[in-house]
Image 1 (cartoon, rainbow, N blue to C red):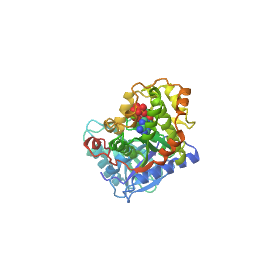
Image 2 (image 1 turned 60 degrees about the horizontal axis):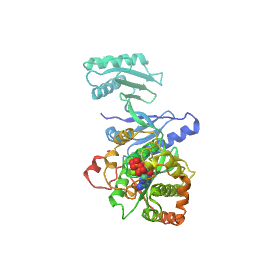
Image 3 (image 1 turned 90 degrees about the horizontal axis):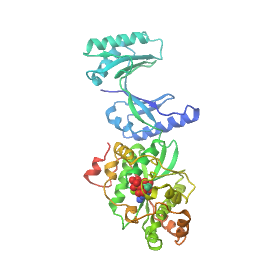
Image 4 (image 1 turned 60 degrees about the vertical axis):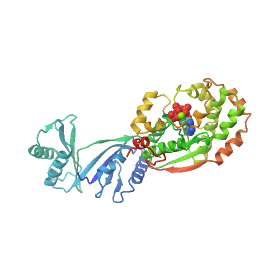
Amino acid sequence: MQYTEVMVRYGELSTKGKNRKDFIGRLAGNITRLLNDFPEIEIHPKHDRLHIVLNGASFEKIDNRLKRVFGIQTYSPTVKVERDIEAVKKTALELMQATFKDGMTFKVNTRRSDHEFEYDTNQMNEMIGDYLFDNMDNLKVKMKKPDLVLRIEVRKDAIYISNQLIKGAGGMPVGSAGKAVMMLSGGIDSPVASYLALKRGVDIEMVHFFSPPYTSDKALAKAKELAGILANYSGKINFIAVPFAEIQEQIKEKLPEGYLMTIQRRFMLRLADMIRAKRGGLAIFNGESVGQVASQTLESMAAINDVTTTPVIRPVATMDKTEIIKLAEDIGTFDLSIKPFEDCCTIFAPPRPKTKPKLEEARKLEARLDVDGLLQRAMDGIEVTPIYPNEKFLNDKAAEDAELL
Ligand code: ATP
Ligand code: MG
């Protein structure tokens, strides 16, 4: 079916003037960037919806991408025809033939913004309905909740016809909520937390701690590749790799085993916060879930969170592991997340980390280290890489299976 445009309806839109304008402008910019390899396509943002004029581009090719744009509630591939009843009949029939399956119910729903058109909405509904009945078999009309609604909109310039209402990703346009850093490991939870942050309109940059020579290139590649899957939702994500080995060595050498984990996490959070400040972010996101492991008890969170007053937002804090896994599968990160490349935390994980570390004790022990020097050297070693949708860093079969497009 050759569609001429896509009609996009907005998501959770604040109705107030300036916010609405920002939302629409941001969404239009995000869609433009996402479709920039289709130079023929035009984007027309309007007050109540946005039109993507295809100019010959195929709807099927952009459909998968539109599904991942936050801020879109629903969208409909549409055909624009001249204001002529015969043209409407012909296109209505083509659309129905392309989408109708035996047993489906349907109705025709005409709206007019131009009341000068020669037929009113009831006449249109009847004429087009009759025409479809004459030319198709097994059609059944249903007024309430039919499977297909053939929407006809009569406007001054032309008539617009569609019969699909596709569910968008919902949420808010990425960037509309501002910038933040996301602590991305190679695990299951932090990619899901990233997805949820993006969905609320937060433009995130990934902060990843790695520890060569204790961790392999593959662990780093895996985290980058996860960022590539998430970049499908934003077009591009900066990946900030932070060397963490020296800090881990020092902690292991100088401090008692029970506090290894707590103090490592305090360093991670401090560094994430320094990077946030440097890059103009407003919050830190991570993939912690209450009670999941020793470092994620409320006592641990309190002892770790002590190092900053910046908001630390934990999108999966209250989700069960099974719920997190379900989302990871839906967004396509799960298969990659479960690949067994050990990251910096696994390598230096003490066999019996304290589940109830004491804040005072953590502070006291930490004072044995050259905290500022360690932080500074880690900051000096950071490396920023822009990562694009589905970019590959690990070359193997499982990684390919995780591909979305
Ligand atoms: P995930 O599946 O996201 O790794 P997890 O259940 O394995 O989570 P932890 O390894 O304890 O949990 O980490 C908790 C959170 O700390 C992670 O979700 C992530 O936000 C952050 N984190 C852990 N390791 C790293 C790392 N190497 N780089 C950046 N952030 C990390
Ligand atoms: Mg982990």
